[in-house]
Length: 477
Ligand code: ATP
Ligand code: MG
Ligand code: MG
Ligand code: MG
Figure 1 (tube, protein in one colour):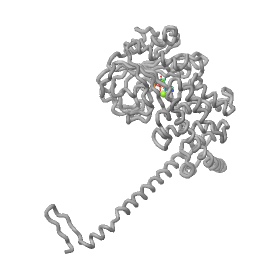
Figure 2 (cartoon, protein in one colour):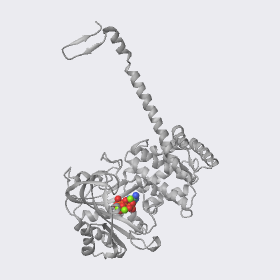
Figure 3 (cartoon, helix red, strand yellow):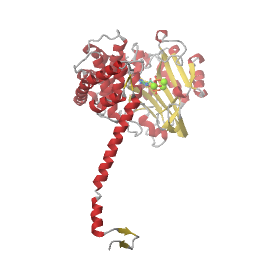
Figure 4 (cartoon, helix red, strand yellow):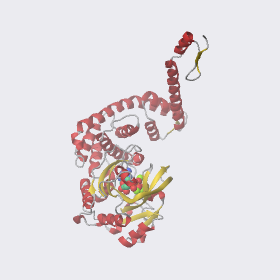
């Protein structure tokens, strides 16, 4: 089943059950607490919080998502992409657990010929929040999932919030057992590679006032209404339904991966390190294209930096596969626009603009790499000669300050050489530099205020003392 068809099926199922189909919002979050949209519920946050009245009680969408924190997992696990699409059904104060759970089960297990995804029941496992006896009961008594395949988990896994203040609540996740060739028995608690998480059903019930970490937050109280927010990973569904090992090998992403392999004359599936690079390239080019299409431009801060980092990682992984001075991003961008174009036709119309941004970033980064890499190599050699395992903070600082190497890049390149970086030293030097710049600016400012003017006034008028609104004495008179 093609990715585009998975999306169509999901939307149709929920549309037939009274949900309004809402188009994906831009990746650029309107919500000022977020840089990029990490989940399907983000555009609906004001409805969950009761800040706005929703125009519908039920909605369904395929939301474009970017999760930067997952960047280090990309290519190494079988299930993490930086850009992915979240299929979701939402209830705003309408149905709650008793209906959401059976609906999810129905869609997953209904035969393909009847518009479902046709998963065999015995392949599905579910988890519930440890104290959520209600959800447990619905799975067990109403849906009929045997207790061996229902697991209870804690806050870390089965309580969902945005990572910032907002709505949240216990959740229930659905996993697909890919079989013993993918890992050990024992359900998702034992192995999340074998048991692939495909769908999260969140029971929005609380308002969180502060969020310090996944498991450490303050609950301000109950939301005005109980709601449902679900998120199913389109790419993970595609991996299962297309019978491939990981989300980088699905219909859309694999074409990018394959082109990267062809361009760099690398055979996929031979060497794990090269495979990781190919997956990173495919994932990051895809993410880069989707971000540029939504209007993000490379820069040194905020979402612009997310984009820059992602594009530069793709470019560097091409070098790791021996691309040398060749420029391959144009071709990879073209394939991406082509494969994602079925679901996102606007990509084709915006192709010249997308190419322009990505080509320019490649040209400038290749320049940076050309000079910086030579300096980096010298630093590595020096470190080894001294018998040390850590690049000095000064070296990382010089690479940053003079050659435009972001610290992430230095860290990554060092780790490829089996070296660490004195990050603390680097940050100290950065701070010293910032403090110097601040002091300079402050000195300039006082200079600009031009104290001599006061001197001149004093000369002319003598010291003037303000004593109130009705009396002014000039001392020197
Ligand atoms: P995981 O535990 O595998 O990291 P998660 O619990 O962080 O996933 P949720 O926040 O529950 O994920 O998101 C809902 C769904 O979105 C997941 O069930 C999964 O199908 C999908 N998903 C989440 N993160 C990613 C990702 N980085 N790449 C692809 N799909 C993802
Ligand atoms: Mg995650
Ligand atoms: Mg999870
Ligand atoms: Mg989850």
